[in-house]
Length: 248
Image 1: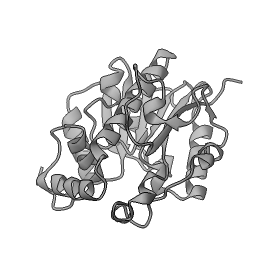
Image 2: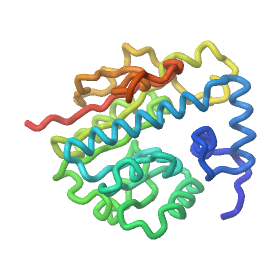
Image 3: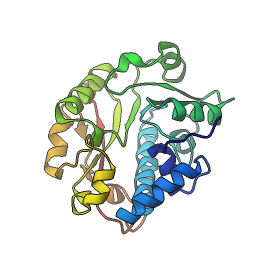
Image 4: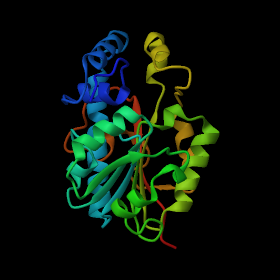
């Protein structure tokens, strides 16, 4: 694969997680962002740890297939590594990230990677969906929706989560996160995220879920969602939840 000349947030996160699937352009961008907001690495590690705990909880509930939106680099504790008995379809909209993911997962019979726009489920290849998320719409699945809410306005986010709710079978789960207002105090870092990036107060998170029902843990800072021992001491930049579509 040719070395890209533009950084990718997915590969920057891989760098912050201690991964190996990034390029010098990503490291430079990550270092520049750290100068504006220092605790990037610990925050994204806390978010990845939340992903792991959320996926384990969904798998423990009997779900054995996952659909992941905005998947980024499929390693460093991503879904198929946390739930190795499950099948997983990773999706993204960035072609470079998709090709990288396909290269990493080449030869796997339990995890695949393809194009998928969370705001339009119809963009997912039906053959991939059938292979890696068997029984889509008829059997409970786990939907992973991390790192996306901040890039969607309220109307689009609510519509998207509503459409996902309609598409999945009862008994399905949604792992989701929201960006709180932590970066508001760091205007240089906030500007680097671009004009589409949205911070929200915690009071806004619940209504945006629509009919998805958060579990008893609620919507809380990710480090405090079912922590393994003492919660990590990190800023409350991300809030997360695991919500369900109840069985009637």
